[in-house]
Length: 268
Image (cartoon, rainbow, N blue to C red; front, side):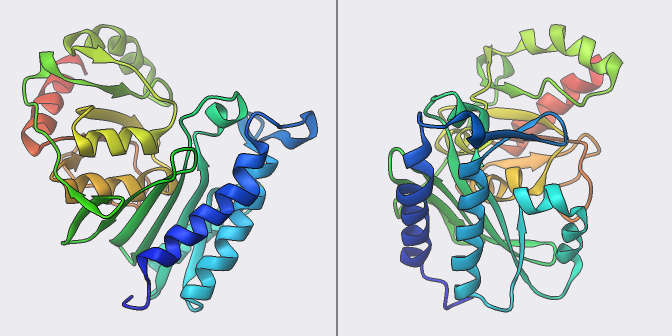
């Protein structure tokens, strides 16, 4: 892992953004927009960006496996790579595809490097702002190489965050309409990468998530953890991307996680 240089990942993200993603921003043709699995939006930029990211990341670690959101849509078995005794790149070429396709500015490239169940490094790159957010396990979280620490807010009524609106059990989904009122504000960026960054910074305080796809969450989980935040599922376990995860709470602190979990118990 020592041969992975921060500047190399930054260059890869910058070049993919400049050459593939941004030329299509607010410039997608009808032929550039399609749907996978019948309902999930995908653009030509997603597909081409993932191919380029894969090519360049595997140049850095040629023996590593690669899991990308778009490849997964064609072959779900690639998730078995996480169980192999090898490094694995995980990529979401454009997190926030719906925002991107509709000309909204919150979208990001997300990359993580793992070894079996361990998250080693992660990167979240904002193409429009040319900002790189990254994390190294047991070393810290950084924005443009400046180390950051989150700000704890442990009073639920003062917290701002998001709650997934899909994939809950029917009864719990109905209760969410009442449950969300205990927080100061509940709103979604429609780009979880941006939300993880803002939880790390302390602009936002929590996210309550359902149906976790690894490319959406591995990079941000490490970023929040290294910034001083915490994660826990409804069974009080830490996020484990090698398993199917039905739910997760991510927040500025372990204390806030347990307070939210306690409230969820009251509404379940």
